[in-house]
Length: 287
Ligand code: NDP
Image (cartoon, rainbow, N blue to C red; front, side, top):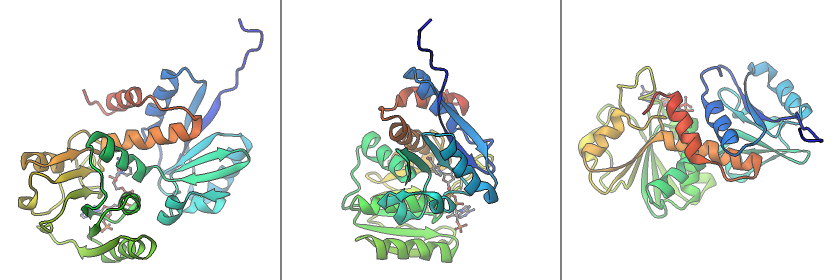
């Protein structure tokens, strides 16, 4: 036995409500194990009214960081010492990193998407025409990162007009990219010059995993890149796009990458992405 035992694990985790079905623990713990790190990822139920106390608690416990999920991503900004520019632009933080005494807010969702796009699909969004279905949190983080990466123009298509307009206004006023908004109607037909199409809605999420966005799929063609945020290796949306010759990017990769980016922010080490992907796939019953 070592003469200087260290029984203290480093702590990270997630605050959410509800949080029991959040699978992040599986991939982060697989990452820690793969690198032999004595770190733990805790899945913690935090009610909205308890977020301030929870953030004080994570400071007191000297936790290395925390993920935030529904409903805390916006509210948490109040309790941070610093927020990175892209997260500030989105107005949402999904990862807090301890830097000395400071708590720093980051958003890794859109960055995970970008990594899947550039690394797996080998597509650089610079100069591309992008169409995003949805205007919620996922759409917000994706469109901001796409705008910062120099997309040519971004079209946002959303069911609720108010939400769609707010995101469009954000891109138009806070980034150099031109965005436009189209209210979603069933059978919506994409502009012909769309290079990248993203489903950033929750359509296709279990238990409604047989559903796909109601658009005119005739407009999807070879040469288009079609991406889904739904964390699965294949969705009916992606199946339809692939059938029409489009290249596809799934949301499972995005989920692993956003976790891998948080892993690196916390530990300072490159994340063992493959081990994390494998663990998550197993948890999702994907062969
Ligand atoms: P939000 O609730 O913030 O937004 C949901 C979006 O989906 C809104 O634009 C909403 O439109 C739209 N929507 C939902 N149902 C319908 C419908 N029947 N018809 C048309 N539009 C619909 O959720 P998030 O943005 O946080 O999450 C969206 C999805 O992204 C989830 O499935 C989540 O799992 C996934 N996600 C994946 C990540 C990954 O790493 N792969 C990371 C983060 C999220 P409206 O405004 O009209 O309500």
